[in-house]
Image (cartoon, rainbow, N blue to C red; front, side):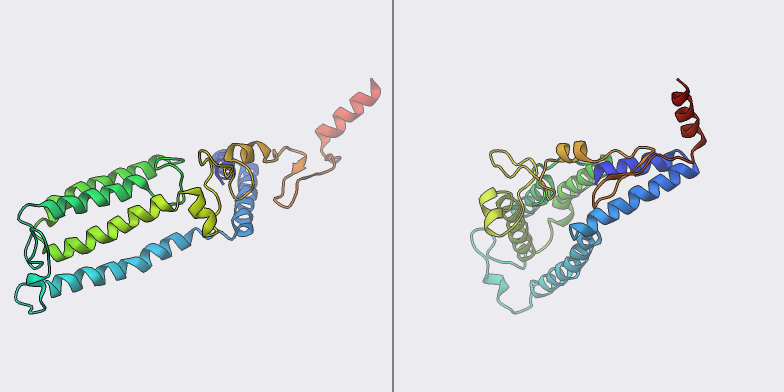
Length: 241
């Protein structure tokens, strides 16, 4: 994907008709590659949008049921120093734990990458840093929330961290039928979905020359462009020699 995207940008950057046509060819090859492996980039947005209303529902419901005087037993439902789940944490331990667990989730990234900062461009790094900053600012911004809300947040964030770490283990990925992570250390599964490392895939990608047509279904060289006057002139010159 990176190779095809870079070639597409390079072709479009020329600003010529030939460059535009070449860029469109690379765009079609990229689309074909995604379709071949059943990859839908927009599905990642669907997952995020699907979780947002669920998260908001839990948050506002907990804010409602943990309000003082609700009469639902949350006043004595806690433990240790936060027995009353309707009151803020007097020692700010739970807000700090929530911010720390959120920071850990952002730093780890998702379970589909072997390294937190692997293969990230400048925009992705900027977004990650912004989310890290939000995790830090979350502590002073939410310290006054009822402790019952923090119990939910800490539980959810901790589960997310454990899930990410677990799904990066080769034995667990193999057990649940997930493909190996590219470049995973200490395991033979250092190949991606194409059966090769990213570097090998880039090296194996056929080069699109003036007399070749590269296709994802197989690269087949085309015959020389006999009608090209430059090519015809060169051939005629060779015959004379």
